[in-house]
Image (tube, rainbow, N blue to C red; front, side):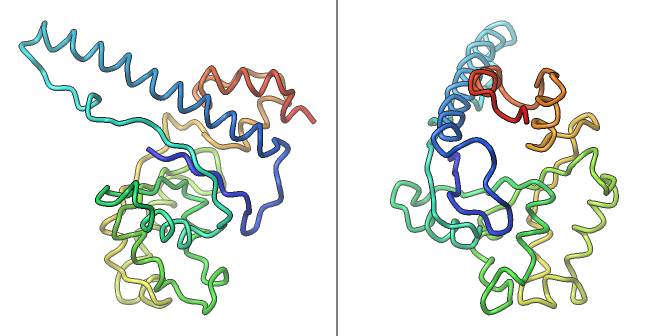
Length: 214
């Protein structure tokens, strides 16, 4: 797994948390993720003994890498990652929120204005997490994604390939609960806990640094 922080954003202003703090939150998150993997692996081994040797895929993971990139666009991030020798031969799956997918497919970000350069990204793999609590219901989000494909779809009309939609993994919103940085900031301002939005370690960093209270 690679946690990648872009030091530039295509269309968003800088957030309150500075770069150093954001890197620290990534480091803490990485530790929490590995800790959860280790715990799940131990539980899986225990169940395996009790249930006759049930396999556990968690043991196949290698860890979590952290990196910074000056590139704001996913097409550039995908290119640099593909050129990195560390990840040669590895299947590269980009995890996006629904809002990020919509920005990814905006031709105005590209020069020339075409989606043809996104082939390597989609052919590697894209996992899209639908958003709860937004302006669009989950069903509307799924229909919008489906409309991207086909001969008359947005992708084909803008230099991409309709078949990219078939290769996308689309995951539903978790329990109808919004999971986003905007929701994190809202809860902090209202003095609410951040269960199910961030790990316990990341929440402690947010509290210690006094982030998002204004």
